[in-house]
Image (cartoon, rainbow, N blue to C red):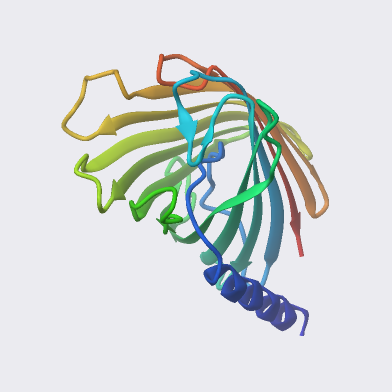
Amino acid sequence: MKRAGGALLFLCLFGLALDAAPAEANHLKVRTPYALDKGELEAAYWLDAFLNTPVATSAGPFPRQHLLRHTAELAYGITDRWWVEAYADFENPTRAGMGQLTLVSHRYETVYRFLDRHDFWPAAAFYLEYKVPLRRFDHNDEVEWKLLLESRIKDFMVRLNPVWERQFNDASRVRFGYENGWYWLATPTVRLGIEGFGNFGPIGSFPTTNFQSHSWGPAVKFKLGPVGLDLGMQFGWTDASDYAVFKSILDFEF
């Protein structure tokens, strides 16, 4: 009964999200092929704070400099291998007297794990995300694919997420990027690591660096029962990268 109620709650909130106006947000998270079991429900609050970034860059409708991004997430495990997620993204500019919290996007994702960890073979999952932009900000519908890979050796873990994305109304073709994390499981409740995120730009334009963004930084995650807190910093390596970004993800599993 509890799981059926959770499923009904998820479907209701998912239906409400379909009526809202969407756009885009790109949070700093290296994803795992293992997230939810059948019938589990997860709610999360995401925050990205752009502390220092190239002034010329933008994040959807607002400048990135000193921008706060907030996201509400709801995820539900359909089976032990397949789950779906819905996100509502908000942006809050804090410079020049701009302080209004604005709903800017909705995203819908599905993940299916097709390979479990076995000896030195990594677990693997297929990830699909669809973004429908808010038309007054952006006209490019976007699909993103990821391959989620995870290996563990004793107290160490590696996650690799190669990323492909396609904007259907954009002549710049398919873009390729990566997300990866290298972790030490210090205790059953604390994980320390280093994470990296990057985008090489449109496939076929390599090795052009004008639009490439690459960043690395430390991350730590605390887990206490059903509650998890993921904190980290990212520092940019290229002129097209954000110079310093703080991230936090607070999640709760039902």
